[in-house]
Length: 304
Image 1 (cartoon, helix red, strand yellow):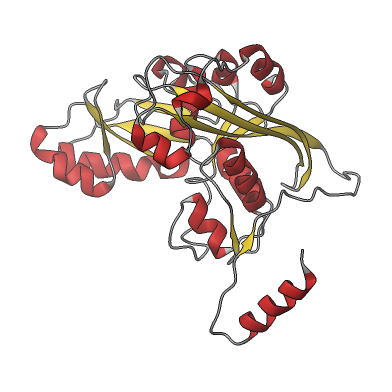
Image 2: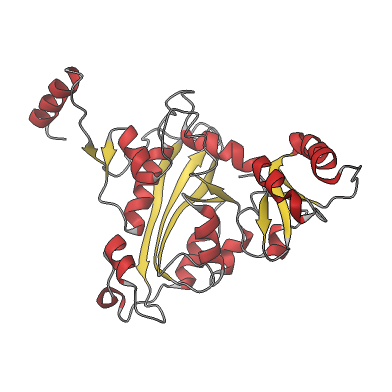
């Protein structure tokens, strides 16, 4: 850092009238040898031609491979990967505006799937800031990601309870006093790694530790199978969502809350006992997957 400018920034911040944002630098890895069991993780980000997981394509894949401890402490970056891919159709102007990636940039470019396979082979967890999207975009062409544990740093860390008004990557960085050039895959990976290494603002817990704890915990999906059409508003107010493929309302919740939600359905929706409502158990191995047969398996995830 530039010492004279740092001094100026400190003076400004000390007045209480200014807030200075610092450019995010790559995370300085821990120089200490780990004194706990360690694991391999991936931080992943995709840039795509759009937001449809079926119709759109990945045009950039960024991955940081890193070592972390059982405590959630990040020790070192092992490998950096970032490659472009030419899609089967021109890149929409809106995507170029957001990412800066043009058709000329991706001309003749191809993501090395074998290299991705090798990179991900020993990873215990894959982390993305919007895992429900990134996982589905990745596993379509790269089967290695279908058998990995996934965690979502956007939705599986209680950012709002920790004092943040927004959950977007850029907003969270600002709250910690940083900014980054962003919108390219590897830059967003570095930004997310920096966030995961931070203590949360209210609890003081390390962000990565909190994320892994949440991701390890199985959840259940309760299906309101057979609910009458006129109960849809009651279901929506309770937090149930509509599944188009299954044509049914469902709710994801912790296992401990299952009987509470089942009782709600019996009392407020069906008006009678419903002991046979379908329930799926979901783990980090299945969560966020776009393949229903995998997502709804009744298997345990490996330890993250």
